Image 1 (cartoon, rainbow, N blue to C red):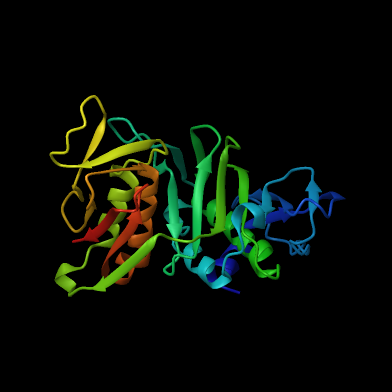
Image 2 (image 1 turned 90 degrees about the vertical axis):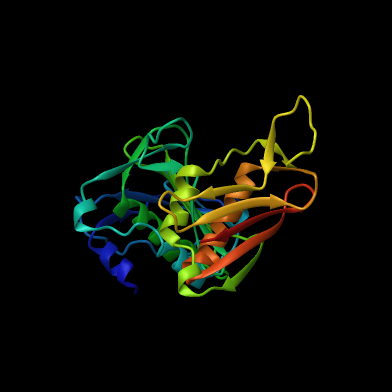
Length: 295
């Protein structure tokens, strides 16, 4: 058992209540009571995820249709990227809400994603309304239970999600299989390596992540009457250390900022975290947009 799992054994109490079984649903759900103030974990979750269940209080769901069949090793790597509980943060709850506006309003602005170094597993945080408030220990705990119950006990592994988390019951965390965009990493001497923390600040605080389609055009291309994102665009971390450049080699292309944001997350997790620069290619409708991360 990993050190995170050992830690969670003393910090979480889970109960399983099965009210019915339906072999056609293709998902399994677990009831979760989380919080450091609860009793120690009791090893009562013995259900193999491929058995479908209906529970009275559905908070952990294993579902390969929505979340695929990710690699266990990849998801262990992704889960290790979550903020780990510290003595200072045990009682503090982070606030979660949508990004945007002229100033930062929440501790974690959504969407928020962690990715494995091979790009094959992602962890996403979403919400059904806002704001949300939750402790780091409970977010790590939900991801750990998904790993234990959905990935490790199923053959092949299943992805899953924890839902109705947080004080408001509106916060979700998912562990899912992922196929990243085409990403190429390149080695760089220490002085030219982008700083992972600086890149995270751009990705989490500066980049737009709207799912609406936008028009991207090279400088000088006339598009009267249209709202246009001009390229190249360079997003530079405050204080330096990371530059994310969006560019294209065609006059006009369309994409969502969410697609570009997701590509930046992939390059950061697959390349920058390992001390390399990187580029994602073949983005947008014409597959000509690129996202590059350098120092």
